[in-house]
Amino acid sequence: MSSHAEEEGEFCPVIDSVEQIGSQWRLIVLHDLQDGEKRFNELKRSTGASSRTLSRVLEDLQETGFVERRVETDSPIATYYELTEKGFSLCPVFDEIVAWADEWL
Image 1 (cartoon, rainbow, N blue to C red):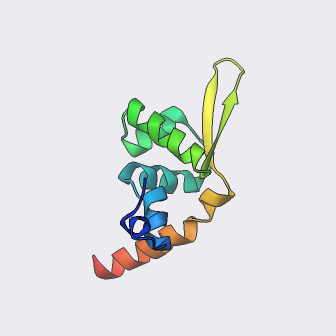
Image 2: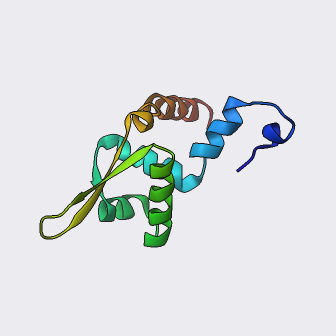
């Protein structure tokens, strides 16, 4: 994904950041994982995402280093997701967005 700023040879950290975390589903999943590790089906219920969408979003978040995946091989097999240090670093950003929304929306 290239931003408009990159096309013009400029670097804009805001645009680049939003491109990494900015999709609706990425934000929902990242915000939902602030409370701790969750199983795939827990995330599916809490976010309202379809299985296909959630799988794609979780893969994207793993590739960008925001989420890590853990597979528990005991019966029944379960897959867990949690924020990485990079993912947790967004928590204050979410807090500020909530504070802004409370004041302005």
